[in-house]
Length: 93
Image (tube, rainbow, N blue to C red):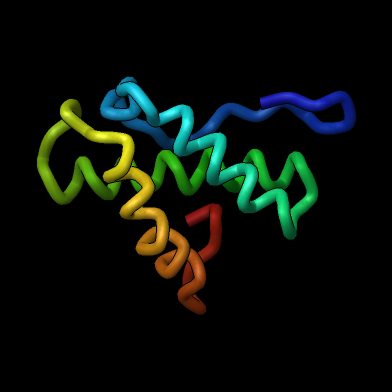
């Protein structure tokens, strides 16, 4: 990711499972929702992270690295947000 006033960033996590139709739409919706309360770059960076974390959780649960459906990423977002909101977790964990 990049922005004129920010240092470039590369997402620290991911999975090939995200190479599926509709995954980008879920990412866009996630970022848009976050942008309602966060600064644009923060919303984008957080969205990228939680989107990838949801896909990794799907891969962990299924043992697969392909076959993910876009709605499954969206379905796991509440779980990821709950995990990140736990008192002993941060986005850097």
